[in-house]
Length: 367
Image 1 (tube, helix red, strand yellow):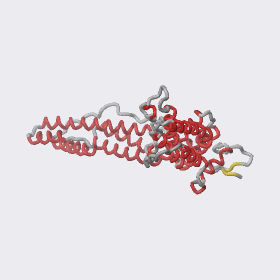
Image 2 (spheres, rainbow, N blue to C red):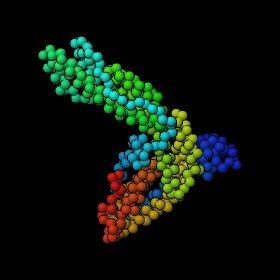
Image 3 (cartoon, rainbow, N blue to C red):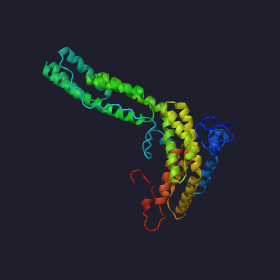
Image 4 (cartoon, one colour):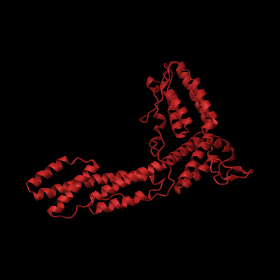
């Protein structure tokens, strides 16, 4: 009995798809080849890309690809600027924003007030706030034994700190809300409750400590779930590309949906394996039409080069297509190819009416 190359489930010989993850049997070979890894040699599509690049007439050295460029699209996996937000895989859980600034603490005697001031100064340092002016004025008020001025300056410190902490809370909450539809955040959510409770009682130092823990917790979540979030976005982009090319992505969507389900249930290793195989299966569907398109763009670049146009920027992006494919970074590959295609479709050989030299530049985010 066969084993599904995506989820490992047994597949009866007569089955046309995996009974567990519903990967189409026609895609078993492509997923198996990808799962074999580099030891199996370069897939055919890598050889095809290399041949396409070599057929573009290069009459000068190709600019070296920035070594950081290939990984740039993955450096902040939740923030692919060209892709929009990843589709939610979890029911949204609300965490309350701060409605009002923290209330001033009740009046205190001189000793208590000075302890608060020391705490405010320490908290400001941890937040990176410049309290130099307030500290200097506080020293002057203390030297003059001006208790009213000391109390007023303590209120000013409190207001500045409360405002800064409220802004930090909003930033951290935005970061959490970006993660929560995709990955579980219960530890961070509990800390947010603690931050609100501390602020409501005027415990600014306690709120700052809890906010620092929130940031650490969110950072650990982002690191732990980064690969899965990248794969979710990658599968979404490949499915979208398939539809744009007139291809039904259905035969490869089974592992994708099963991977999303396991991701939602916090089964991270299993989810990542399924999503990685789903990306390969979707790429196998997209390949034929993709290479038709890349042949068209290649021919256009050759035409532009023959007419004396400068196609160097597109060649760098075309090289990046190959680099990203070799790393099986399909999202980065499609984004790089999108830039090549935009360049080719916008550019015209010198002398053709209706196009200026500026059209030879690749599309930017501001276009």
